[in-house]
Length: 372
Image (tube, rainbow, N blue to C red; front, side, top):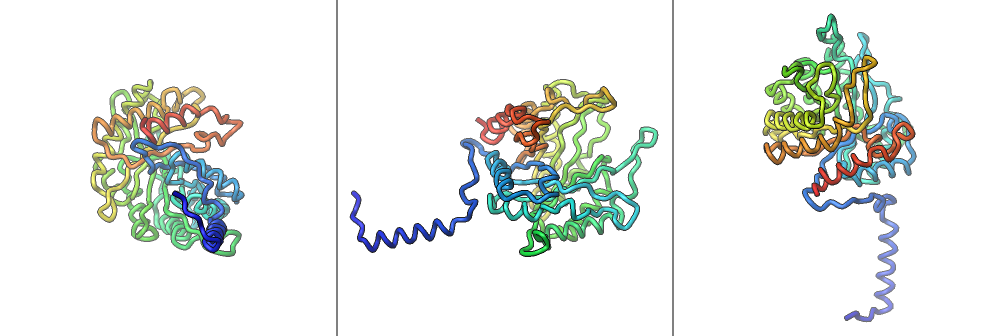
């Protein structure tokens, strides 16, 4: 039964409603949702375009992009802010500020749109080694004292101090840092020492320190470049999250030719990484395993060598292998990442039309997020 309200009570309720409406943040109801009924894997990552952070995006654009991330259950935004300097000078390991000129704007409006998402600065380095007569030779610029000092200072600024929009106003801090150091060297002690240096300095209290890590298939039945299980455990002791890059595994004598090969690689490597990590992690909290799925077009090198074929290396095959590792081998997986997000979500048109990856989007929701 409904009771009659007094005039005074009606006025009070009306006034309260108006106050509440006025106080609601502008972006409070802008995040769309997609059904999540079973398992509901929510701890996922996405690699985001560098130009989203090098230039100040409009608040409306940021709202749109972040809402799309939220709808696909992304928690960790890996914000690509550029390539670290590779020099023999005092700037080794540094990064020019123009690379992240729009980062503060992004952090502000991303947090307003969905405060649950974490903005993780993604720092890249692509010159870990050179080849001499086919043999990997370490780059002496990487991991030296100058490199480590400059990288640490950059991370301290962006994660601990924060940056302003246009040099004025509040300071906006990133939530953590992700490293993409390539190419990989087997059981790389110099890399491990750099990770430890960052953990013991700028990231001593941070809980969002992650890194892309290698996965190498066998070549004619022989393992060549994998990190050993013992080395993975050493890295896990430093990082809060480990992100194996299980893509671009074809060509140059690789044993990956079919979707079945690729699916098995996912099952084997996720199982191996999970066992190697075990309960190891900083602060006695196990490092999280968040492998990265591919979502991009065919890649060819040397004019004819296909090293990524989406007909073979695709989200469906990858998730089939991942789920087998979890369901059959009890692999512990915290979440899954997507590379590249702009392709996956249809933001690279006309190079990649919006409809090109609709199958990937469907597989993502049904095979992982919802597990229907």
